[in-house]
Image (cartoon, rainbow, N blue to C red; front, top):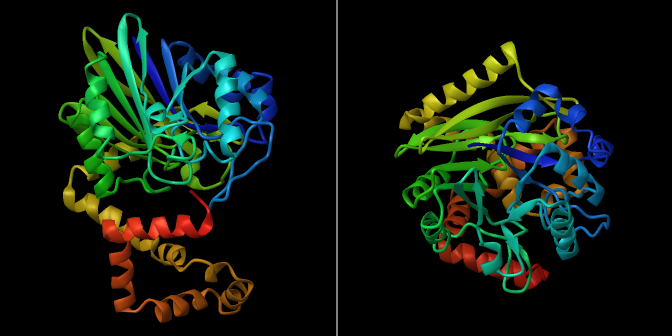
Length: 383
């Protein structure tokens, strides 16, 4: 039994017509299409609602949307199952979610990771392929799309719930896949928290854990005889010219004589399309992937790489904590006049050592963090 797991994909304005016309050979190229056609089952993450109505929710970050007619191309690519547990599935509100599930049902494409209640959203997908029962558990880190007591949405990762759900699923299937939508965008190494979580999923019975969402290829880890993939990149998402968006991995799971083996197919974007990477490009993608994976085996090197990314993100992180000031016209003008130095001056003035300690305590302490979220929701009608 051969199973393929692709990463995030979104029909965008640049290739929407190709999706609507199910022109999959142009979208994928013949070689990649042949790889997908050779599989017994294909899994992807649909990173957008499918709806013809524009009803964006209030959030930070872009609100994505694709026409319902693009489901023809999704079906044509060969998607058998889609995880909807991601940070964009509620971008067009409840109507966008219902429109998506209706379109997928009409196309005969299975999905999981969303629901009207937490109980519904947490239901895993179980499918029998070539006589082998596969269980798929989908969850997402807490952003604007998670299901609440009042609103439908995506299944959130919750250590008090998710690990038990995987243990229960283990009893019902031969092989178990966990798809976790989380991690920091553009970071090629897992955070300590994400790494502990993924290893715990393996401890609870997962045969493979795959982290999506980061928009870049990360690294892999062999843990307790199982595989963890920290970042696949995007399968087909024509949204950014960033270097990280240009490559991705298609994960192949082969089950032979009662054993699962893992292989990778490197991919690269070509304009608004995706192709199977070949020759030098394929070698470079995989060499970089395995180099990072080797670094992950060294606790000192892995923590060094993650800290380097954190330091590079330092000003952005403080700006996020700052709120509205960094969006003001005055701030943008002053920063341009001073060639970017205004940013550093402002942050140094606002965040002395004591201020940083207060900020750290607010986000690190579970009680403070939970109280802050409750207060924000109560004052902005977000919940």
